[in-house]
Length: 228
Image 1 (cartoon, rainbow, N blue to C red):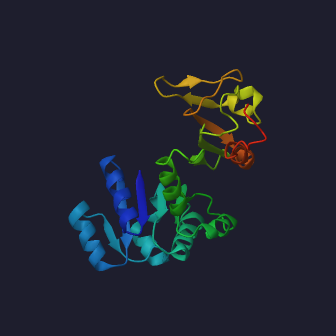
Image 2: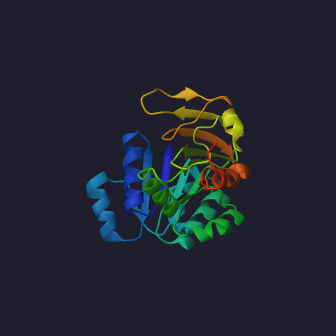
Image 3: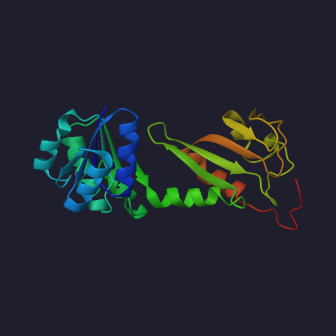
């Protein structure tokens, strides 16, 4: 594949290195000449000095033959403009934007840029993964399918603890979940599966069920509610 990356910062550097190691052709568009020189020293002749939101630069980069276009600068306005050009003028099949401010997600989507990567959200979910106290984590977004891959942990005080999955308000997880239990291999779950503290469920969930799931698994049993 031919991949164009706008922005040769930390994200752009590691993406470029991974793609090169996988055998793909990569070009990094970077306006800062010093940063470009450093990239050339580390990765070889894979850079172009310029701004990825300008037509002249994208023409020189050969954007019309790109298979993937990634805008990974620290400025959302640059990423948005670059992705719009790649998508509308050059008809690049796959366009992805780094999202620096989560509040801009709707703007990107309204303007036709469906594939965005929220850096802050990724960092948050990574931190949560290191702290077992968090019962709900989003692992992967399948935007085209309208699905999310999430991890549900059964923590102390959870409404799911010591209950069969079919007895809970999230029995629908039995349709597409894998149980990970300490000391055992991955298991297919059913409504009769009894959950224990320390269990994790890796689930594929429709986007419209996310908030319901988050509310249920994030809930703690109150003293007057008792156990399951």
